[in-house]
Image 1: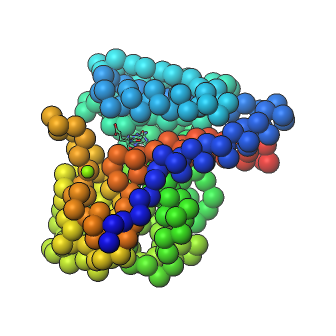
Image 2: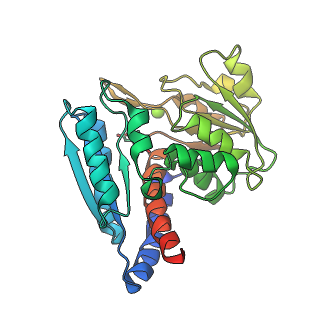
Amino acid sequence: MTATILDGKATRNAILDELRVRVAALAERGVVPGLGTVLVGDDPGSHAYVRSKHNFCKKIGLNSIRRDLPAHTTQAELEAVIDELNDNRDCTGYLVQLPLPGHLDQGRVLERIDPAKDSDGLHPVSLGKLVLGDSGPLPCTPVGIVELLRRYDVPLAGARVTVVGRGVTVGRPLGLLLTRRSENATVTLCHTGTKDLAAEVRRADIVVAAAGNAGLITADMVKPGAAVLDVGVTRTDAGLVGDVHDDVREVAGWLAPMPGGVGPMTIAMLLRNTVEAAERGLRA
Ligand SMILES: Nc1nc2c(c(=O)[nH]1)N[C@@H](CN(C=O)c1ccc(C(=O)N[C@@H](CCC(=O)O)C(=O)O)cc1)CN2
Ligand SMILES: [Mg+2]
C-alpha cells in the first residue's frame, strides 16, 4: 500500500480562496481586519513563519502589522508592545510568535493579550472556551489537523486516535478537539512517560506525531491503512526531519508529510481565526 498524501499546501490554497471571498464581503461592509505579529529575537525559523504570515495576509486582502523586537527585550518592554496592540484599533487580532527567548515568561505574555484579539487561540480564555465547548478562536495547528482530515474524508467518528506529544500548542488541545461530539473520536495522549508507545500507536486508526523526535514513528508501529500525520520538526545539518520515518508511507492509508502536510494548515487556520473574529465583531 502507498499512502494517499494529505496535501496541506493544496488544502491551504483552497482555504485561502474561500477566505478571500469572506474578506471581500467584510470590506464591502467597511471592515478590513488587521493581523498583528510580535516576534522577539533572531530565530531563522520564526522569522520565516512570520514573513509567511504577512505574505498570506496580503494575498487575501488583510492588513498586517509587524512588531519585531531584539532578543534582549525585557518582559516589561514586551508587555508594553502587547498593551499597545491591545489598544491599537487597526489591529483586530494578533499573535506572539513562539517560542520566546528563555528569559521571557511566555504564560504571562499570552495572558496579557486581549482575549478578543487572540488570533492564535492560545490565550487561557480561548483554551477555557475549548474545554467548555464555547465558540472562540481555536489553536491553529490542532484545528488545522482536524480540517485536513475532514477535507480528505478520513473517518473520525469512533476512530481511535493516538497523539504523541502533550504540548500546549498541539497535543493537549488536539485531544479536546477530537473528542467533541462533532468529531467523536477516542483519543489516547502519549508522552515521554508512556510505557509502550509502539503498542499505543499500533492500535490507532489515526496517529498524530508531535513529539519533536526525528523518525520516532516507524512502519512496524503503524496499523496498515491508518492515517499518519507528521507534526514534528527537528532541524539537522541535512535539513528538516519529521517524527515519522519515510518507511511509513508504504503502510499507512493516508500520510500528512513534513514538509507539506500540517505546517501549511497552521497558517491557513490563523488567517481563518482572524477573519472569523472580524465577522463575530460585525454580528456583536
Ligand atoms: N504563536 C505561534 N507560534 C508558533 C506556532 C503557532 O501556531 N503560533 N506554530 C509553530 C510555528 N508555525 C507558525 O507559527 C509554523 C510552523 C511550520 C509551518 C510550515 O508550514 N512548515 C513547513 C515546513 C517548513 C519549516 O518548518 O520551515 C511544512 O510543514 O510544510 C508553518 C507555521 C511554532 N510557533
Ligand atoms: Mg521525512
